[in-house]
Length: 275
Image 1 (cartoon, one colour):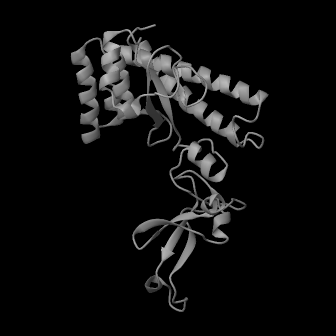
Image 2: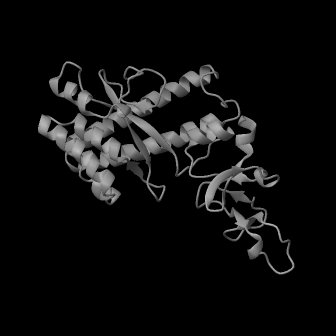
Image 3: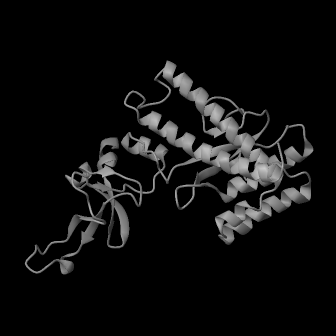
């Protein structure tokens, strides 16, 4: 099944997106959405040109001019590098669809507010499998204590880091100093889910302490990533596809995203005079 799924293309047939095996077309390489020069198009018989075959057909058509000697490429979908590695055995950099789970510490387990955070934060966001700072899983802070995870990705332009509503809620909740502030943090996430406001405006609502926590969490994630790469260079087995470079590309693409998020956090921390 892995061989079949890696060769299948997502096409829209009768208004529904579904996988299909397309000989020869499946040899086209992937480029991120907006960077490809061609697309797979379904053309029903009624849309065929006069004199053409009367059968429905799938064709590849250019979506922009193709330069001489430029490879014909299509987009396999808005997939992060983890999905590309799993499904096809390669990764791309830059990848505007890339994303990662950033681990955010919730405080010492003996702290009453921290215990309330653990009780009130949705269980799906809690990291219950790994101790904070341990190897494996996704990227995050290396402080001791309970940890939760939220999504960090690129914005629509693919040039700036984007904090998901869940990640922003975790940052607010982790820095809340009272039960009312904790309730407010959880309520803010619900409001953002219902009303998708401008991303930049939403991010600007984070407190100085939340920006500082983001900075510390991203710095810890970068340290964890560097440590993982060092271990992979000593032993190839932890990361598949390392010998031919796919995991190395995914590693650098993830570093790009974390570095961009760190720059954002550092700018916000600096603007309010925090160290």
